[in-house]
Figure: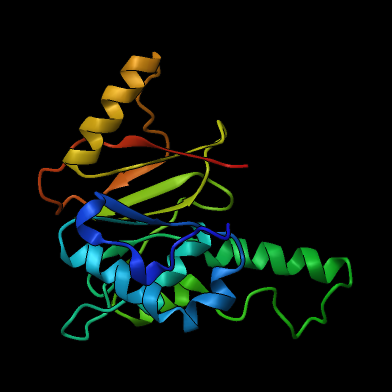
Amino acid sequence: MEATKAVSEIAVDRFDAIMVAGGQAPMFTFEKASSLHQKFAAFYEAGKVACALCHGVAILRYAKTRDGQHIAKGKTVTGFANVEEDFADNAVWSMNLLARDEHVMPWRIEDEVKKLGANYVQAGLWRGFAIRDGTCSRASRTSRAGRRHGPSSKPLASKAAHARRGRGERQGTEGVKDNPQLDNLSSPIDCGVSNP
């Protein structure tokens, strides 16, 4: 971990994509992570895959293009849904871990990206789901198999498909939804991200 480079040191031209992981921390830490906002936007503006998973979709609240527009504006996105936040809140309330006027998360992804002009979609409570709109991909959670399934761009799709075929794996498409207005990117692929 000590040898991990700072986000600002990542050279966009050396990578095909950026993936922002989820967990609960992004909801509390991403606001001040300006280097991450800028790097995510740089990948997006370079036409590379910019992907966020679960609560990592919080990046869309902050990431803006060079002209100051939020990346989420006008995009079809997904992420941790209000119905799932409600479930989490009810669970902690029922265990008396939080007062009824307190919430697990300080804000909600679904509400915030809608305010930014995004078309938010979801598959329901605890369902694996991913969406692609151009080169910006988001996934709300893992499938039952424990792997995230989601769309990618042609360069990554061909690399991943080749690697999967070499390992004898099949292509995963469970819970994937494409925006019908998308350009002709490749079919959805298994992003290969495992849940610990």
